[in-house]
Image (cartoon, rainbow, N blue to C red; front, side, top):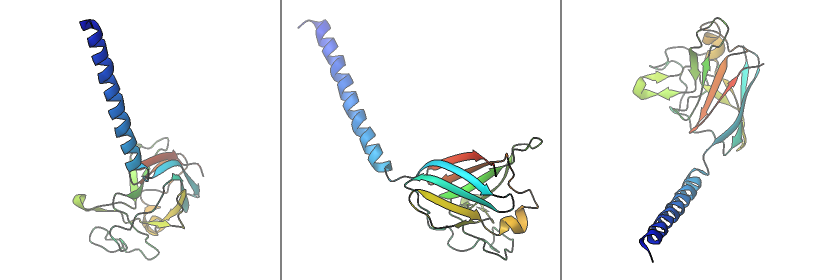
Length: 177
């Protein structure tokens, strides 16, 4: 065999090995993430004073609350919430609302459901989850939204952007009630 053909066979062999290893790694990744949440849609319905959020997808599940109790009246949430405060879920399940009105700065208004103790952050606004299924989760905002946030900074309005995070999946939508 000439050296040219040996070189060609070596390159083909190396490429085949790379393809086989890549396929094996891809299959292992697919297996390890097969149970991970996949969000295929997210919408906000209801009204600006009582929004309802619906996530659709695959492998959806609500994590355990973190911290386990209500955020109301805690060190990181000094608000007294008289209604159902809902729960926070660490960084595994939360929403972020951005003001996207014509004269707004498009800045984040607030988040709900998030707890980041290393940043001394606990959302006073928890999430109230309905009956989740592996393909659909519906939830509303805790009472802090109506009791405190609707007046300052503002309710969630048509045209605002809301993002939901569930595990490693995220999905953003423009609000259209």
